[in-house]
Amino acid sequence: PDFEVTDKKMRQLDHSLPLRHTGRLVLPTKGVDEFDLPVLWDNYKKHRKGFLYKHLDTLRTFLENVDRILKELRFLLERRNVVRDNTVVVMTVNSGQSELFSNFICAARSRGFD
Image 1: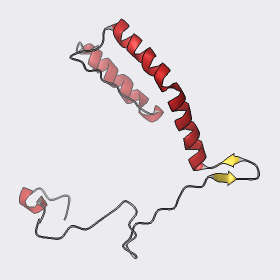
Image 2: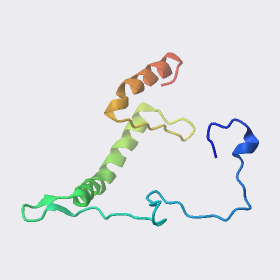
Image 3: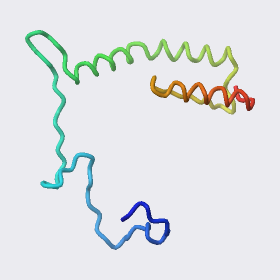
């Protein structure tokens, strides 16, 4: 279907058609999923870790520190009294979005949100 179509009836799904799997990596020629496993080592002899080991190291760092971080976070939330209706809003941004985030914070503060 054309995604530019504004007529709601044109965007409706036809439920009489059979369902079919469409994964992220389906090749049009084969019609099957294809996924290459990430490499463990970029260079085993030089002990240069590959994609998978680098991410496992990051996960290990997180798991080793999560209890301490949660304790610290609870302390900060209680101290600053920022919990409203048992809810805390947490936002993360990458460095490319930092200016937009600063703008959001300024706009929120100007409207009385803390």
